[in-house]
Image 1 (tube, rainbow, N blue to C red):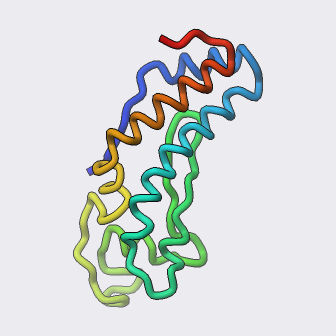
Image 2: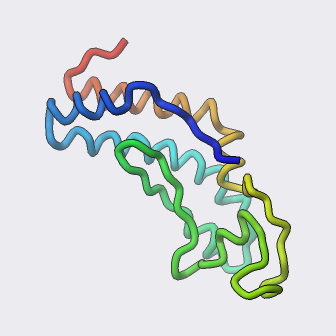
Length: 137
């Protein structure tokens, strides 16, 4: 299960922003990071905690066209296993965790907060467009 929120006209908005100013497309990334932060706010308190490193590894890593949430990394390479489950790096170690293709925390956060994410993205993208001098309907 991949949760997606489709934004119609994002490429056109990006092109218009680029024409208005070279710095304006960065505003798109910032706007999409706000949506990613909403997912992180949902997922972080639900992650299992022993040291807190897995929950602390959640980061907004958006591009100008996609809102993303990254997890894991060097300090918590097991974080995806906590979310999705599976056998772990070595069969049987850590103990098997039932695999859920939709995950337990991040994708569930997208589903649970879909309306709020849509609202955040709409408002933030409209603000970016207005800041570039574009008319927003």
